Length: 508
Image 1 (spheres, rainbow, N blue to C red):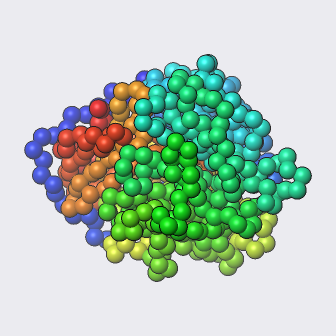
Image 2: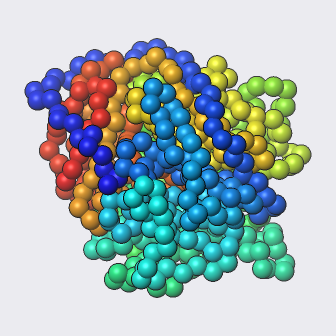
């Protein structure tokens, strides 16, 4: 099964101990040699290029499934031991062309991660089998037409035995008047009992490049946030938040939604401010936007962080190219285990756009003690100037440090092992009975070092790729803490004591 035998006993009567690390430790990554893999193709593969990170053989270590575009997608089996290692080993069912990205989720609740595969063509749902085998689902009823799919998210709505799926399509390639102002619709698949019927079209569509179901107000219902590419909707469009009523509808300004238009590429979500509500990071062509949730507004209101917060990453931080940056995948994660989330941003020119930087190094924004962020990817060793697209920031070898994989357009994929001598850490996995065994929609609360970190379990976001498995928490100098889970139905588990530098599975 996907769950390994790494269920470790918690330690009783532990007292919270130790503050966050006062001075950020400079993270350091070492390159990992892997088989050559390149995301390539024509204009329909200028975007996409995601990677899915998930365990498909039951050893608790995540594999990587990387989109190839015109090249076949590749599954990298995790062979980590004393260090991070991967071997290309792609079953025939996954050796597909036309793949723009993929997201793992356990659709049928059997304990094996399935895959939602995004394509230029027909999208696929593949059932996960033992030892990284995959096969088409039988009797699920899912069908897909020929689309240009570039975004995905999923959630479990109340009372359903199957997840609700959202596929974000980009430009309608069949529109003779396109590509500008030819954005396609978002396709929403809501289960009809044990099957899926035809998708509902959420319109208007504004060329989605990332989307995320999130319970932004923590009421037990996830709404769908969509980040859209202004390059093709040109005018009249904006970012979107769909309220998931029986008939989905867009939130209005009167409800607190602030209209916002950008060249949206990716979404990352995390409670950075410590108030229990998720903030967002939006990648774009020109600059990146960190938006802080405003709970006092009484609605879905996120406000731009000020420029001096250090999160815009708007121009190359190395080299002589001073043109604006183009951001793609974004991910929050504590790369030096100091108890503060940092931000990784994959960057790269769309192709040969002269208004944007051609040599555009990836960013690693290190969070400082005062909540500002500082660029550190150069000394960290992850400032690649390839045309980066999707990425995975995850602990590949289960040593408590977040490693990194980056898919590049027309350049080799990169993997980096985190070798930072930082603070303490905790890895947490959450499981409940089917349906929704991964507890998508749950919130993890970890109290350590005098602070509470809140983590929502979601499927979606990023740029064309997501991950499933261990949730990583940096603890700083704290040697112990306590943990609880708010399950998707709102029920809270008891607080349990945890010790630092451990792996813990919370089972409902």
